Amino acid sequence: ASEGSDLPEYVNWKEPETLIIHSDNTLETKRSAFGTASITPEDRLYIRNNISPPPSSIVEDRDSWEVSIEGVAEPRTLTLAELKTMGIETVTMVLQCSGNGRAYFDHDPSGTQWQLGAAGNVMWTGVPLRSIVEALGGVAEGAEYVTGTGGEELPEGIDPLSILVERSVPLEAMEDILLAWDINGEPISLAHGGPLRMVVPGYTGVNNVKYIKKIAFTEEESPARIQQTRYRLMPVGEEGGPQWPSVWKMDVKSWITGPLDNRGAGPVLVTGVAFGGTTPVDSVEVSVDGGETWHQADFVGPDLGRFAWRPFVLAVDLEPGNYMLVSRATDSEGNSQPENFEPNQSGYSHNGWRAPGVEIAVS
Ligand code: MSS
Image 1 (cartoon, rainbow, N blue to C red):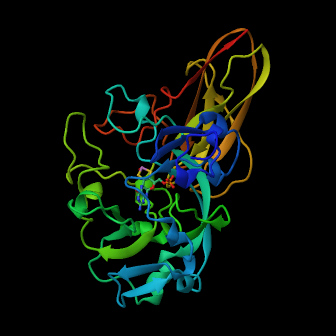
Image 2 (spheres, helix red, strand yellow):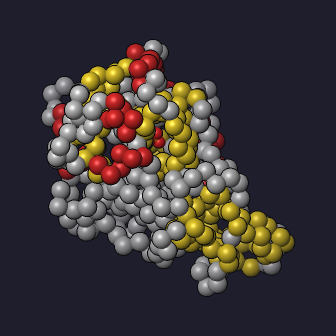
Image 3 (cartoon, helix red, strand yellow):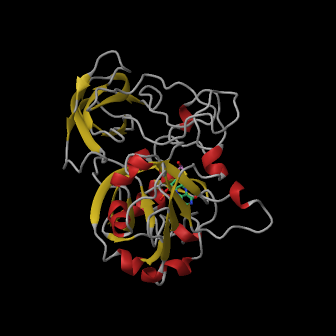
């Protein structure tokens, strides 16, 4: 760990005062670190690794990293240097763990007790997967999924499928997928998936496979446990399995980022962030009385596209008293955040507006 902080070695370059350390493999961004920033800096971005990352040697000679493309007319292994000649695009998107908000469920789902900081808004640059597919003669007939495999070294002596990070998303996601080498304009750190990451805009964190070493167009979903039984929305008390819906597309969501502390009476800007998942966020309302009355907030900063979040503000004048600040976003298809999100066994995909409310006292 870096001097004076408890950050694990591989992320000791992060800003410790902006992070909640749940474990070496799970770090959450503090609510107070979001403010009204359009982009989350990499040194504040949350971390989630299902298994230990590969050795840092893989980001020493980035251009020689190889990814194999299968399930296309002309399968091939391509180096990062080659990918860089095949096309380039940038997408700004919310990266959010499937379990963000788990702490707000009442049935105590096991797993990291994320509040709302297992998320950030980041800008990725890389080659569109569709450009690669075009160069390799198109997707093989019958393919229904894009299946991405992570490049971790698997420990010996255990069933590889029980631990392999390999995720499948529906073929329709291909339109927006990038194989990214830059985050916020810099080469991606090892912690966030460098030298190469598959990013699937609008889909939850787990689908964005780090250190991507294979992309296959497949007829079936990956047989890995992370696909078949985990990251599924099953009712409370049920075991995971392929019969339950996979955690894929994100839903509309928002949260308050300030004020967070008690204060004296007077004018204050209530701030937050809002996003729509795969559809753009359209509007956001704020309530200071726990949802009794709502006021339309204004977006601030640039519109960075349909997968990005938008910071918002509402000016209010607070008299002495107790307040409960909440926000409720609506996407461009008219979907709004529910007051309470229906529980699911593993505590995924929480987007209820009430539970993340902020209580403050004004004197
Ligand atoms: N990838 C890989 N390769 N490995 C691992 O472990 N994880 C997941 C993703 N990807 C992994 C991957 C998850 S689960 C998440 S969230 C994400 O990632 C995170 O990211 P960052 O960068 O933030 O760390 Mo939950 O749904």
